[in-house]
Image (cartoon, rainbow, N blue to C red; front, side, top):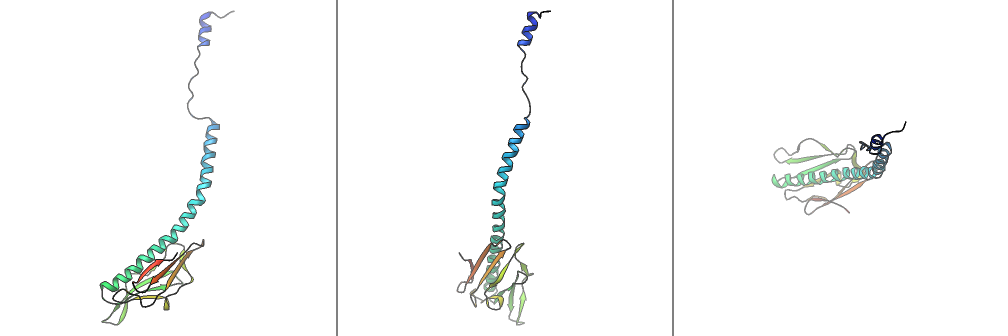
Length: 168
């Protein structure tokens, strides 16, 4: 039996339905592109995060150093920052002229997570930086901090103005 012309017409006009979704091949290509991009970007981001941790700790130390200087000037007395190389901590103290004793200002601070004072990296005499009532340092010195990945920052104190600056 031979199909009539109306059946042929229907067969010839079959429309291809638009497909929805993605093929497996297209999905694999997209996943491969994402994987390659991630493998390139991850080491760069991790290295930047490691370095930024040391930079953050350096900026925080510079800020606290400035605070110790400001305390001396605003209270017209001596202040000091004591560095503890073993615990990677530091403490700010004010001199109380009435009692003749040093008074702690707040709790002992520590450097950022996994950042420490480099062994032998504190060159201040007796591990302390002392400010006079005018904000000048008694002695010069430097502090070097590092992390376990070898990122280092050296901070050098200027005696005349009592500021701690990054050394290049």
